[in-house]
Amino acid sequence: MKKVLFIFGIIATILTACEKGENVAGESLLKVTSNTEISVGHGNVQGIITYELINPVVGETVEAVANVEWINSFDYSIMGKIGYKVDANVSYEGRAGVITIYYGGQSTDITLTQSAKPRPEVVNIEVPYLLGHYYGDYTRLNYNYYLVFSESNYDSKDSFYSAGYKYFIDIYSSERPEDYNNIRVPNGVYTFNPDNDGRAGTFLESFSIYKEYDLSGAEIGEEPYEEGTLTVTDDLVKLEVRFASENKLRVLTYDGEYKLLDRRSEAGGIY
Image (cartoon, rainbow, N blue to C red; front, side, top):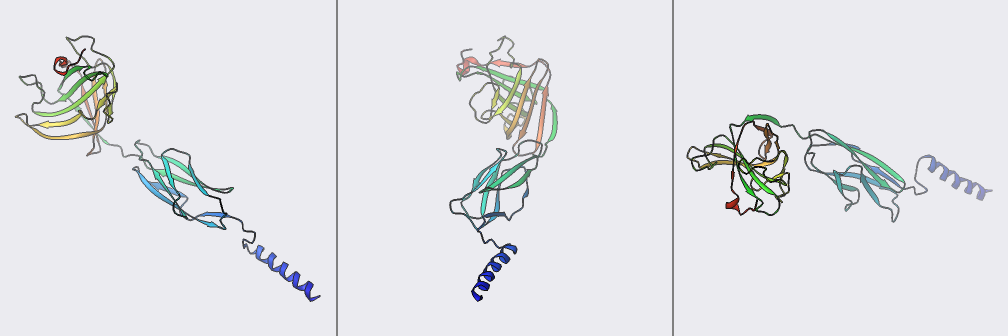
């Protein structure tokens, strides 16, 4: 009789332990210990998600998956931590993504929101002069036009390095001029090209820059471009450009006739 009572006592102890939530059966569980709602700034970000494994299973691994490409580079090298990277948000709108962490048959969602890139102050500039050169296809890629949004006209030697501000734009187009006696940049939209590969429809970073000159024509300052767009139509030439040093969008417009000199012979261009 005592033996029977002893067996019933063991069974009762096991049942009581289960009722108290003790993981007698060895059930595996992943518990996220960091926030499940994350907010980050608009720039490049590196972050860490922390977690605990309860009764981990041999051979089972933790995996994180994002539903957007701008959350990436997951790192599991340290137990209990998942590293990740968030790419900079280059738009003026905020965005959100979800990181899902999987372990066995279990999954946990983490919501990540990223703020928008700050909108720049817009500075409108009506440019008095638009100058330039045409170099032909000397690169054997596309046709090269060089524009200058300028505060002053050509000097007596047809040089545009005279006093005032200059916005230099090194443009590549798939189109040659229709009239070599009245050369014009072909209509279209040209985007800033930091790769400097001479693609049509772009202007190159390497020779596109803002410079300023004193009354004697000596350079007194310069600023590289961070981004920009040039739009050319029959009635208007517009440059939207931003310097790396400031959060201002400079919008330059010119709406008249302009002089673009033929420099093919100097550059070795065929056309």
